[in-house]
Length: 200
Image (cartoon, rainbow, N blue to C red; front, top):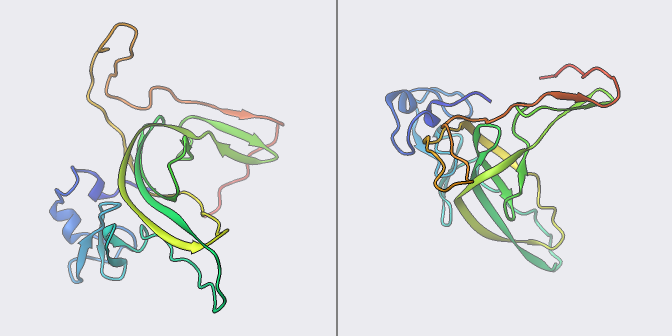
């Protein structure tokens, strides 16, 4: 996923490149169509990718809007309240990602292959990144039929992570040089097979 111009500056301070460039998802030129900012992923999107305004989430795009529950039909079904969230995670791999998920945030997130991975029977699986910091972006609750699968965690935005360099605050604590990741990893081949080529 390439870095989008809307993620190259502080939130809300869009440049002319953001406002008159391409839509953050479909690539439509914004110079001739109506556009707006998604409150979750902070990208400028065209009117076709805009999902309108949701009471609990604010203006949001179709890619960040939580999926609506399936129609349970005419018969009565027991319903359960689901928590729909958008978080921003600072990861140990050196990325800051925006993630949409159902429920609370996980301990790790599959982001990239900077930390290494494994190959088994020709399948390459990158190691997941630890979550160092969490920021809540949006949260809402929705009634769905009991037993509805929560769905997978969706990474809807990624940008490089930076930090202010500082020495340790107290002896024994770690400081930071303001650069991430602090380490990189290598691939472990578990059975001697060759990784299958990536397909697009």
